[in-house]
Structure formats: structure tokens, C-alpha cells
Image 1: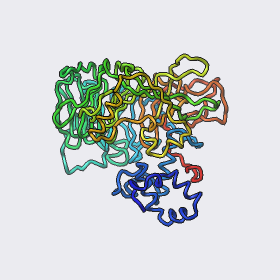
Image 2 (image 1 turned 90 degrees about the vertical axis):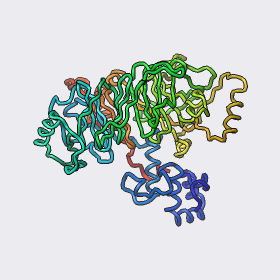
Image 3 (image 1 turned 135 degrees about the vertical axis):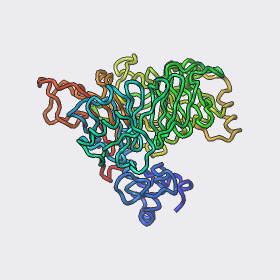
Image 4 (image 1 turned 30 degrees about the vertical axis):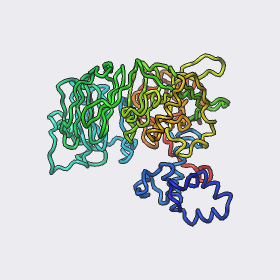
Amino acid sequence: MPSPSSAGDSTQLGALAVHLLTSRYLNDVISSNEWTVYRNAALYHAYASSESVSLADAKDDACDEWKEYCRRCFVLDKNWIGVTRVEPDTRAYCESSRDVHRFKIDEELGLLTGWLLWRTPSHYARRYTHVEYGHGYLVFDRAAGQKEVWRLADHVDDSVCVSAPDASQINASRIAERAYGRSGRGCLRPWTVLTTPDVTRFYRVVYPTLLAASQNTAYLWDLPSATLVQTIHGLQASHAGMEPLGEICYVDVNTRHVVLCGENGVRVVGREDNTVVLHLSGQRGFARTVLKPEPTLGSDRIPLTMSLQTEVTRSAGGHRWGQFRAAHLSGSGRDLACMLADGRLVLIRDFESIADGNLSVPEAVLEVDLTHVNSADSDEATYSHGLYVLTLDARERGLAESSGQPRPTLRTYRQPCGAKSATRRKRRALNLRTPLLNAADIAVSWLPRLSDPTVLRELGCVQLPRHKVSVSANVYRDDPDYYEPDVKNYWTGGPMFPPRSPPRDIGFVVCCVDFSAPESPENSS
């Protein structure tokens, strides 16, 4: 069988399904070479990262064949974009306490079980503390700004001492041990307390690194050794025409870069030499290409997930970005996503192409405008509410046709004469593969049931593991005004709240939507 790079469309799951149904000869060939065919399909659709990856390394659930693994991945992708007839499963956690402000999910260890495994003593953590977690390390801050680090007890080697918990941690650990034991699933042990000379309000854990930033200095620790490995000074420096970042409101990190999101802009700093490799200005920045999702009309039923049509606009000027709120690196470390204060999303694929001077910021950026949807009854723009899910490689994963949506509508506005041809000549001369995100590659879905503005204003936290979207919210307020005894609450899966019943105790629970709900093989092709 040919390699996935040379097989072309024949390795697409959609094409394979057609071959199996329309050609007895191809059916026999595919069936006789099933392992190789579907392994190539997994590579083609990016279900496996490389040709050296085995099925055991690629899969994260119980399946023994590449064909079944591809089917499950394809169904998962279709569930995310809201184009299947199967309703995702929903479930609520922490309903007894209803006091969840921040949470993290360890899917690999399966620690979200529905029952309490371990906890610190009451009132030990400060109110509304921020929580980070990665590879068994739990980090949260104290009122005075120090960062407490705890580690899963089963990962701790008592024969090796590399950290120094303080007395407060040790006392809290002894109290927890009396209730839950010294080790076991979900139990944690104190690891260390990290301090800085100034207040570091924003921090992020990407194993093995903890990044914490004050308004002018960033500190990076190696968590396993509990040592400070790097310090970056002068975060607000306004050199090379860059305005100061302003108040820092979000940070991210990987092995190569540190991302600093301030109200006035975003900077990506190289860890090798502490130099700024990318600066996005809120006052001057704009995108030439804007993607605007629109709701799909014509149905009275409110699904849990709705696929949205998209319209693309292009212009020479653009809408200036203004203030930033958050910035995240992709898992590959090549791409950057930034959220603006007004709800727009700025996406850059291969941001280092800007640093290398191969593309300008407006050329490299795709902006997704989530600030409004068009009203069905008027030409006025009305603000939308809810959670949106963007799949940035929909075409690569074979989802472009599955969505049932037309390709994005393109509207082009005037741009400077010769700009497009000059850009093409430059790319051709440099022999570059364009890093631009293509709007046709993006699928946008919406979770309309969580659209109550009151619920959204109180949304505490959102997590996005591979199979689920999880939020901490008071979703009981999202029950409709009517009551049907056999209808479940949209998110918790429990009985709907009768309007005339005694009011529920207001509080936050963790609500999960599981998009890996199984679908029968005949519906997955």
C-alpha cells in the first residue's frame, strides 16, 4: 500500500467508505490490507502524530485495531462540531459542596470520579485561589503571594529529598492523611513553597515548568527539582517601537517561549536569550481576514451543540484590536491564540514566520469575530452568549464535508494596489509554505444551552480535555421556565427544576459534556 503522503484522497475515511460500498474489488483490497490502510488514514487525518507511532501509543481508549481507532476519532471530531445525531453525555460533579471556583482535570489518571478522593483541611486555601496542575503537580497561591506546590503521593520517592515543604504544608498534610491515608489514588503530599521578591499574580504550569509573572519580571521554576531556573526582567520595556504591555493579565509557557498578555498587547519572549520574538499591539494591530460565525436557522429544537455557518471578510484596514484578555500557545508550540476584551479571537499559525520577517502581522492573523450574530428579524447586530468550540484543522480531519455547511462566504474589500501580487511573489521567492490559517479549514460550533447571561457572568472556569468540555457554573439557573418531569437538566443530567418547587441552594458545580459518546458504525462513515 502507498504511504499516506503519496496515497492522497484514497486514505481519507470518506473515500474509503465510498470504495467499500461501490467497488467489490476495492472492498476486497481494503479488507485484505485493513491494518495498513487505516493506519495510513490515521496519519492522513492527524489521528497519529508520525509513522513511528504504534497503535498503543496513539490510542487513549480501549480499541485493538486501527479501523476502530479511526472510527472513534472521526466520531469524536463530528461530535465536537455538532453534526451527529447522538447527543453528548452530560454529568455534574461536586453537587454536594457546590463551592468550586477553579478545577483541573487529569484525564490520563482518571481522577474525576464523582466522589471525594482527598482534600486539604477546611479554609486552608484562600478564597478564590487560582489553581494550576500538570503531571501530578498541584500549584495554588497563598494570600501573601507564595506558591504552594503539592505532588501526587504515589509519585513521591521518599528516599530522595529535593524539596522543602514548610510547617503549614506539613500540618495540613498530616490532617489530610488521617482522613484519606498517606498514599493512594488522588492523595497528594506537600512538595515545596516558592517565593518571589515581588507579587506574582499570574502563573501557569506546563510540566515541568511553573511560570509566575509580576508586572515587570517573570520567574520560571523547574517543579521536579523545585529550583528557579530562569528570570526575565524588563517585561514593560518599550524598546524597538513597542509600547509597554500595561497590566499583565495572562501568561503561558513552553520549552522555547514565554507568552505575556498585557492589556495593551501580547509579547512572545524566547527563553534561550530573553529576546522578544513577537509583539502584537492592541492599538495598531488588525487582521486582514475576519471569520464571522452565524447561527444555523430553521429548527425549533435547541441542541447541545450547534454547527455554525461562517462568513469571511477581507479588507486593507480592519478593526483595531484594543485590549487583550488572554493568550495561549498551541500544543505544538508553533501557533498562538489570543482573546480580545470585546470577545474577538486572534489566531496565528506558525507565529515565528512573523518574527523571521516572512509575513506581516495582518497577513498572518485570522480573526474570529464572536462578538455578535445577525438577528433573524432585523439587520441589527445582537450580542451572542455562550461557549464556542473551534476546530482549526477541519479539512485535514475530513470534517469539511461532514459539517453539511457551505464553504465560508467570501467578501473582499479594497486593498492597496499590488499588495496581493507582491505578497505572492515574496512567498514564491522564499519558497515558503504559507502559515496562514485558511478559513475553510475552521469549523465553529456553539453550545447554545449554556447561553443565559447570568450563568455566563458567573462562569468560574473552563477546561477543554480531548473528549470533554468542563465548566464550573451555577447551571441550575439555565433550566427553562416550563417543567417536564421526564426531561433532564441540560447539563447536570439530573431532574429538571420545577418552577414552583423550593429554590435550590445557589452554588457552583463542575459540569462536563463528554463528546466521546459512542455512535454505531453505520452512522459514523
